[in-house]
Image (cartoon, rainbow, N blue to C red; front, side):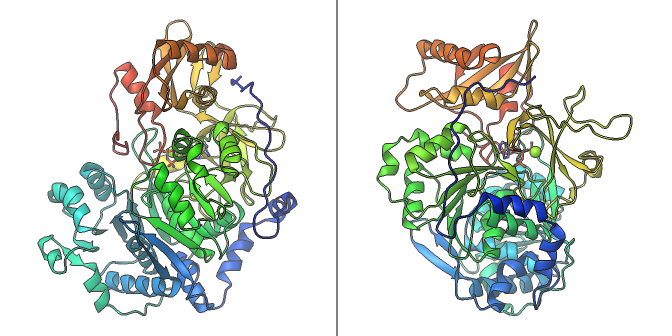
Length: 601
Ligand code: ATP
Ligand code: MG
C-alpha cells in the first residue's frame, strides 16, 4: 500500500475567465464524443491547406485568413525594452529562413539544431525549419560544451543556428570533435564576423538575399518535425522524435487546458530547449493566434512579477520550482504589482505541491492548474481545467482523446505483460500503479533517436508505459506518487518522495525539499530528506528536530528518519529536483550523466 496523505485539502471552486464561463459539462461532453480523427480532419480540411504542417498552422494560416497584422511575439530585450513581431512578419521571415536552408541543400527530414536563448530568431529558425519539412532540434542555451557536443554528435548535426557569443563559449571548444557540422548560421553579431567561424554564415545577410516566398511542400501528418531531448532526471537524456500532426494536440490542449485564445498574452517560462518551451512556448499559442511573450533576461521574483504586470500577461505557464521561488520571496512582494490581467497559472514538469496551489489562491488570488506530460507524450495529457474543480495536489484528469490506465507492477516496479500477453489494469480507485496511455494520440513520440529497442520497450499490449506511478481517485483525478525509479520501499511501505516533500513543505521554514531512500539493513530503505529553508529561518539542530517531529506527526511510519539542510538542491535545467544525484552523493556513488544539471547559483 502506498503512503496516502492524511492531510485533506479544501477543493478550490471552478474559476471563471473573461470569456463565456467554461463548464464542467463541456469537459465531460468533449471527452465523451471526442476522436482525434475529427480534430485532424478539422485542420487538414481547411482551404489552402498543405497536409498538416506545424508552421502552416502556426503562421501562414493566420495570414491567409486575414490575421497577419496581429502581434505574434512581444519580445523583451536585455534592458527591458520591448519590440513586437506580427504574424505576417513572422510568416515572411520563416519563409526566408526556409529558403536559406534550401539554398544550403538541407534536405527534408534532415535535422537542424539551434543553440539560442529566448528570442524571436529562435521562432524563425524553428518554424522556418518546419516549413522546409526538416527536423528542428533545439538545444538548451545554458548547456556546456560537452552536452552540446554529445547531442550534435548523436543527432548527426550538420546545421546549427546560434549566436556568435554562444558559439565561442559552447561550440568552439569542441569544434574539432564535430566533423559532421558543416553550416553554422549566426544570429546577430558584427556583419562580416561570420567568416572567422568555420562554416559560418551571417543569418541576417543570408535571409536578406533569400526570397520571401516559400511554398510549404504538402506535408504528410506523419512527417518528422521535432527532436527533443528529455530532461535527464533519471539518467542519460533520450532523444524523442515527434511528427507534424502533434500540432493537433498542441492546439487542442492550449485551448482546453491553457484556455488560450487570440486575445491572450501568453508567457511560458520554459526554455525552448525543452519540449515545453517549444510545444507551448512557440507552437501552441501561435496556432490560436495569441501573443507570445519572450524575455531574454535571467529570472528573479521581482522581474517576474514586473513582467507579468507590465506586459499584461493573461495566462502564465511555468514550473513548480519557479512558483516555489515566488513563494519564498514572501507575500508582501506580489501586493506591489497589478496582476489583474492574469486569469490563471498553469504548471508542469514536477509534482506541484498543494501548498503552492493554496498560496496561488490566497496570495495571488489566482487558480494554479497543474498538468502532467512528458517529452515522449509531446503535449499535455492530464490536467486540471479552468472549468473543473481543482484538487490541490492532483494532476487532474486526462484531456479529451486520451485514455489512461493504472497498471499493476511486477517485481521490478514496472508494469508487466502477464502470461496471457496482457497487462493488468487496476480498476479500483486509489491503487498505486504505473500510469499508461492508450497508444495512438497524434503527439505521441515516434521513436527514440538511434534506440529502437528502447522505443519498443516503452509499449506493451497497446499501452505506452510512462514510468511514473500514480493513483486515480473515484472521480478520475490522477495523483502523482513518484517516478518508478524514485520510489522508496521502507519497512513494507511504498513511499513516494513527493508525498514526503509535500508534507515537509507544509512547515513554514521549508522552501523546498528533496527526498530519497537510503539502504538500511532493517527497513530495506529509510527515508532521508534534504531541505532548503526559507529566508528568515536558521538551519540549525533545533529546526532539524522540529522538522523530524513535524513530519512524524503528518506521515507516521513513512516520515524521514534523517533531515539534512541544503540551500542548493540539485535541479535539472528544466527545473526538476534531481533525486538520483542527491542519492548518489549521499551514498558515494557515481554521479552518472549530469549534462542537464543546473549549476548552483
Ligand atoms: P528523463 O526521462 O531523461 O529521466 P524527465 O522524465 O524528467 O527526464 P521530461 O520528459 O522533461 O524528462 O519530464 C517528464 C517527467 O516529469 C514525467 O515523467 C514526470 O515524472 C515529471 N512530471 C511532469 N509533469 C508533472 C506533474 N505535473 N506532476 C508530477 N510530475 C510531473
Ligand atoms: Mg522521462
